[in-house]
Image (cartoon, rainbow, N blue to C red; front, side, top):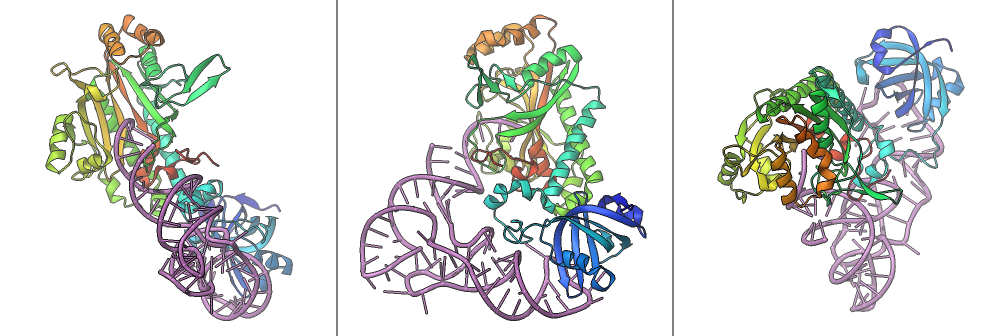
Length: 436
RNA sequence: UCCUCAGUAGCUCAACGGUAGAGCAUUCGGCUGUUAACCGAAGGGUUGUAGGUUCGAAUCCUACCUGAGGAGCCA
């Protein structure tokens, strides 16, 4: 060949040049003696033009008979062309078919509409589609943004284990794993307890990885395997935790708007809904949130947790996320630091995204007093032996500390304006779906 | 786990008690600027499974299976 191989995303640098692209046939339009193969290569789409009279008969016939998603390389000259997708077009001089998808078993995902069940069964192929491609790239940007944010704010990445011996917040929602028949271990539902140990070692840490919840939830916001980033900070109080959570969200939204405009356009996201996400976020106490909900006709009573409709009601008058803090301790995990003035309240905070995307961040200040933590473990009927190492953190230089967890998929769903989190992760694991 | 809805061609749907259809995909033919191209033709069905009601069931009833939406719980 000898011509330069480029990716389609670089086409603008090669106008007037003869180059080769390596990809797959996205779609093909024919008009007698001219065909328009649209090729995708993972970086973008390129409309090619093949004219019968300018090409060897075999090349033209091979292109003309090409089936969707057949793999091929095409060599030709790049030209600016307003009529083509992406603004550039390639005049085909040569083409090599790598694999011709058979007519007997054509590519199942056609350029028309398909149902959720069918698409989910073909997730491994669905990822080639434009919207899915865009969503996964936004996910990549969110993950990179999270890493960059913490890395540049003095946090150290300290990984926490995925096999864990005990529950973080009770065992009912844990996946149990047989560990050589010797003992039972569980798939982690949070790295938080380890994070607290790590924060006492490094000051500011975060862990980032998959977490698992065996909740039989069947909604648009739930996966059984999802990714969560959890920062934890020594010497941090609730106000500092809220400040970091807000700063992170603002940073990420700004970054998506800056770097992923094309993807948001592909997803038909109303970006004005994201432009307004700036600090400060409205803050309210649980008490005030309950009052607000009552005034809006919710059935909620003080002491109960918010349902999905409550979360939507809470945020509907705001153009940015809402922070709710000081929840009743009774509905929160055992490790929450109580409010000094009102010990029945936990120093926890949830960040609720607008447009019905729900809770994207949950966190708070942890108990740092040994005696109080021992008391809470007993009240929650948790096996003391399993938490001895955790109690050590209160025996050896305990300090006020806290952090939060942010669910990546809910965040990405919000950024993309997607109906369901299943499209924000390449291979979603849900209540009744573990394949492909 | 509970509630609601839906399973008809490879896909998306129509027919709603009386001969199972369309678009896309596939095959064949036409077209030198198409934008989910268009035009013509062809092939493609045990209507999710098992029972029941009826002269007659895709359609009505029962159970089961599969999927979707929601509740609770959560990020």
